[in-house]
Length: 242
Image (cartoon, rainbow, N blue to C red; front, side):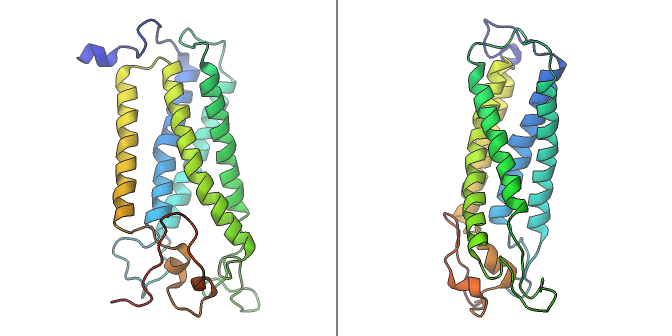
């Protein structure tokens, strides 16, 4: 059994990738399979952090620091992985004629990921009582839920889940091209199932809270509370604490 796990997934090919490809794989797996899912789960389910006395305590930014930290760490690893693959010597003996599938999904994942960072940087101003403008008013793209903010949320959220799925295909096809040991494919597959199970469990518990209410509370005087939350499965919170 142990020997079977250590053997390459395709016994007809050698497992020969070299330093550049091996560290490219490690960087990309850590970025896309570990850090990006952590950032997604933090942003979806921890806007109201465990133990937070919401709505008496508002705008707990621990989820934001976790989300941003995970995504920027992932970006650094993506750039390292990209540099490694672009500077790699000639193709190794492990690569097959179907390497185009990994190249395609890899470049699509990087392109979508780049757009995620771009939309994040262009999301607009915050506003509200905790971030007033220079004249003291509460106006801001997020607080007023302007068209810019609504467009950002629709694109950023939907594209985030899409790029996560594409990255799974990129990682899986990459491991196949590297002819990785069987234990690696089993481990990654099990990890993806665990991430999906955690996601489903947190969703079932109703923890996908509306960002707007998590920041400013349920008071109807805040303009965004009159709108439906953006995102499939995102819920409005009760207007009063029972």
